[in-house]
Length: 123
Image: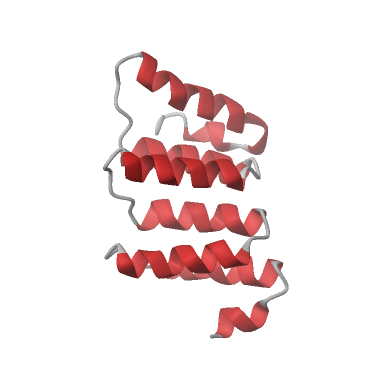
């Protein structure tokens, strides 16, 4: 699925998720990279709820999310105007011992801005 990252375009997010789902049928276990690519496709397709389902699935598969995974999920929150979930994900990164980077902080701040909660971005 990493090769098919171009499928993350808004008009092709469904194709990316179908490809991700087909990995299980082909007896391939998706890894963190595949989950992150699928979450990014959801973000581009403004399907932030599906991004959260994939993030939960990643945990159930006993895989570790990384900074890119969390940042993609926070970007999905921004598109879905869910600043509260974006901030919760940022807090979860510390708990999961994943170090946020400038992209992570930027995604959380953008979600706050888009949700008209810019004061939260300054906290």
